[in-house]
Length: 388
Image (cartoon, rainbow, N blue to C red; front, side):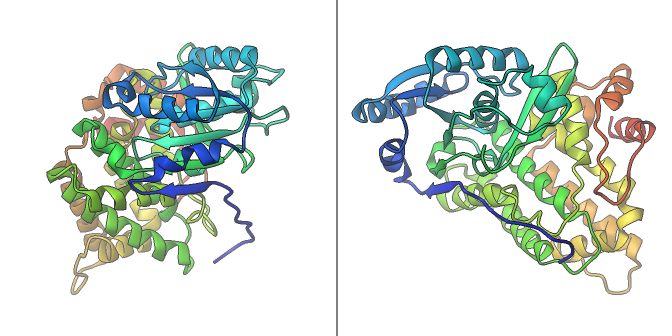
């Protein structure tokens, strides 16, 4: 393990089929006025909304609702949420949904009392929070982002054609997150597998960095093998509790800052994918799968030893009698087979990218420097063209 680091994660996780029963006890620690945030209304169809309203009522809470959070929450929507939270003087934000709902709720929590333009402060200048923060808790209904146990928040500015994430500190982490794998059963297949790939991409973005013997890499290899195994089961039987519970747990540990310790981390697949999302509004996990193989083939020569290790330890490639290039390529081939098997987008054109968009998407891509190759904007264009 290289470098110095501090690890602290203040989020309390409550896991299992009966986890929602703990919501009332957690909410007793906070004020009376609760801002209930959710997405397009699926929680009403499934009956989850009624259960949560009943719990809030039993706790004597006053509920202020903010529904309609879209899959790629926008700055326009954020401004609506800020106004609702501030004008109603809410004491706590309860996010019920997937990563977009939780990301949005965290953005509202740090923006409601921000005296500056939150977009400029947090998503352009990437500054820390200097105002009152409204505490957040979550009830997770879709796995993938890991937002239930981290400080990340991704917001899309449609006017500027930018989709940007800010990783806030531990003061913005959810105070608690309720994780019941059964709440994920009703997701459509495409959203389910997109979440699976978001998890995989989170792990790979951290794995493909550094050259030292790092304990985090061993942890990530185990997470990846468990994810691959459980995802194959869940694709065939979406209500297999064991598979869905494993995937939910993997998603949380993939991005709760643990495995990033001692790593420089990459994040270029996410930067390219987010830029695509700003142009196409495509499902996040699919934007990542669409460009991943093109990106990893491009950077493979610069991190060859790790790609060889990935092929052998994660995908079971037999290295005997083969050179490094062959082993590494076979690893990516196995990864591609898994992606096709689960129904992921394999090309950028599948998520709505056209050739004329590519220069703009490349310019909108933030360049990170923690991976094996620091890209230029021109190289991002090459990768995008290759992914078409």
